[in-house]
Image (tube, rainbow, N blue to C red; front, side, top):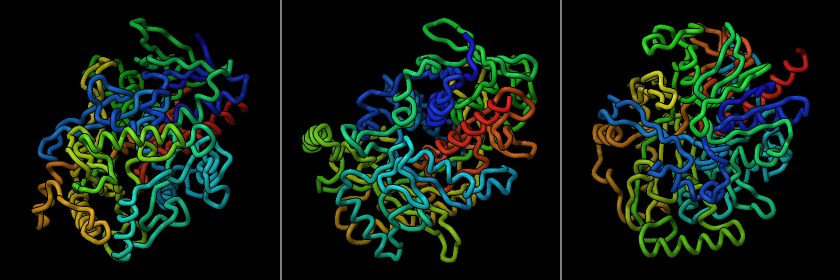
Length: 539
């Protein structure tokens, strides 16, 4: 089989690429995805994330990776859930629509990423959006991605927002507006129109599912790509395994890798592109010595304060919670509202660890359930939790290979808290978060603080952080864009030193954005699709 473009991975970026490139009927696209179609009730119902995220067997739409033991986290292995279906992680995330800060993208441009300043990427955010707020300087209503207000935020989330304001944290009605600072409710990638109101709007639901019948678009699911094939330094196709058979697909123009921050560098390494000294010991012939592949891994380390409450205004485990869940399911099926429509992480804040900072350096997520160990550890009754992460961590890790088997998971080492500055800032964040949670009106909901009730000193908090902190699912940077010696792709997202090969996903971010990463990943693919089409026209 031969196509113009072969896209590896149908996550947030891959879905955008397939949809936008196939708008030209003369361009033939093949999109290859290891997971399924991403249309199940677990995906469509936002609260279905509780079934998918823990990665219990049988796993539902989730790679469920683990890290290597982390020395700064008491030697624990971190958990790294990633989406495995059309839509990728946008099919299993909390749906939060957050772009980050202007300075993030201006910083990319200062690092030599030409064309990636905030003013230059804003049009691609707008191009993606069908925002319920309509058109304006920071929003658009003409794109495929439904961005909505939450259907039925809980009263306890409103109490969290009020409590933060009591501590002089200003209310912010739009974290993606003129400034990010403050506390408020997150907007979500959720359908807000007609019969699908209240359903998750994954990247697949927005971009891919509506165009699957295009004759120039071939979508192959349940197929794992094992390597990129090269003719010299030119990518000419890929091999994938499906139903026990290895099948080759040729790319007449380009191979586009959109596997994400873990799978894209893994596939490059398996294909012989990366640091030769680390590839060769696995018996892989180096095709191109590119030292930055798999390096520069950045992620948001998250710490949680968890509480129990007697009020049935959150998700609960037990007979009463089960009955409430059943009623909520019926409500959601009827009109798309209620607890099933909740993103779980309903409220949030972007705050300053120290007065006088020019922009927020901490992010809070307020969740209407007890999220303990990624919902793998359950607590009876009703409860809620608040999360804090350092927005721009200094610690950096890598993604490498354990062996040459393409079906083995990548070796993921985030090196969490390897830079002491991250730990010191996280402790400050925990103290601010706890002060909010001990302020009325949110304080009135508490009956018990789980784990940390007796933690008083910074040393106590450090011990808890090392015992329980883990990712909040924002890995980036492992195929970073730039012009330095460790850059993997250029500003057009073409792999340095190679022809016919690009990486288009969160792995190209040179630095982690100050917030959730799904919206920026979709933006990256929107911009990339335009660059690819322009290059196609010139060819």
